[in-house]
Length: 445
Ligand SMILES: Nc1ccn([C@@H]2O[C@H](COP(=O)(O)OP(=O)(O)OP(=O)(O)O)[C@@H](O)[C@H]2O)c(=O)n1
Ligand SMILES: O=C(CO)[C@H](O)[C@H](O)COP(=O)(O)O
Image (cartoon, rainbow, N blue to C red; front, top):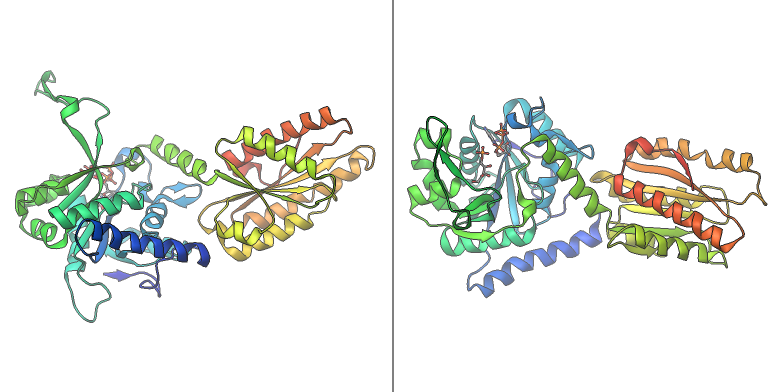
């Protein structure tokens, strides 16, 4: 077994140094398991997770195993690890990876600062990979970092959108029933073909469910099942709940999961996952103004218009930037009414760099400037704002996507509103798309 980077057994916080938010989150999350347990009449168990990540992703049809395929330039498995690490009551996360991908995996752990991870060699089938993960947890020795948990979660590395509430439900149900798994309604009807490819019989869709992940088990229940199961099971089996039933005689409690629990399998699933991530990180936009004087109405108009462009967006005025960064806002609009300089934008970029916010997701920054023909000639203005290219080049190295927006600023109120409306449409597109091809571009509204 290989261990993660030093400090792997440390506190709950994964990723960047966002102490305030994560500290509070971790405490709330730890108490949620005890509270939930107390309500269900049981105490909080010691919980570990095993993530099979040793597949080759044949159905995806690309050379890279799907767990390492990039989504917004970060490997898919890193999102799944982040989702599990956020849950402070999961003590250890054991990831099964093939020998040839061990170094890649170590690199991912280091780069994205994942914590509490141990690596184990994967097997040739998913069941064998899971069994390898369980074995290292079972070997309860004082010298080892890992210890045998009471409950173990099994979760595919390629299901990145697992939330704490479903993890809590399967763990609590496993504590009570011995085994539990997330299910979803069937999308298509399941039919059984005969040898000559004719319909043999069909199942009544409403009476059946799709078995998804996560699943959770009392450790001894699933470990004993794996120890007893046949080579045939290990080679061709696809269902851990079935092993618990067949060998440990435990009927798993089934828990309704969310639609986002689906398994990334085909190439189109990568696009779907990317859209979900983009939507989640575009929910909050921070507008920073360089003035509080009478030009402030420009900011207010822009806010108004952005709210109509971006659904469910909370627009925050950038008074306490540090706090906003701590709250993990990934979209910033820096409105420069007073000057053509990048002073405010530069200040924001510095703060973002210090926070490490952009380790996990690309941060969009749009530097907005105004074009008032009457006070500054077009050429002169352009020369100044074109500096955005240089700033953007540097920012890109830190996963910050900076672009510039020049908004025509006519004296007439109606015309000004029209330019601001166009500006808001461009800002919304930049935020929603997070398209790295537009880095350093100066767009004109
Ligand atoms: N020998 C294997 C095979 C699969 N898995 C893991 O089990 C999970 C679910 O399996 P699946 O979606 O079938 O992954 P692949 O086997 O990689 O995909 P495919 O069947 O398309 O080849 C994935 O996280 C996969 O990496 C594993 O740990 N060890
Ligand atoms: O579906 C599942 C639960 O029952 C498992 O998550 C698993 O993904 C099935 O593996 P495979 O796709 O390799 O058959």
